[in-house]
Length: 75
Image (cartoon, rainbow, N blue to C red; front, side):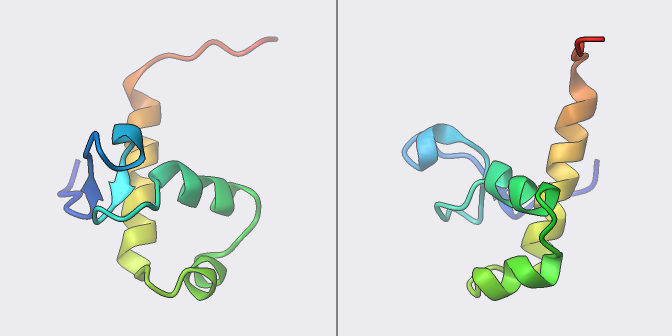
């Protein structure tokens, strides 16, 4: 896994969820926006304080975490 220096954890910010650069923007929020069909450009337009690399690292972190455990889905 490459360096995810924009992903931060602080128990006093968003309950310790992974956030972007200490802001109250969670990885889950970004992933949810992209999963719902927003493009990276649309996310950046809606949240001008974010940078492209923030979104890319959030997606990379989420993909890495998804590989970390096995999740059984209903058939």
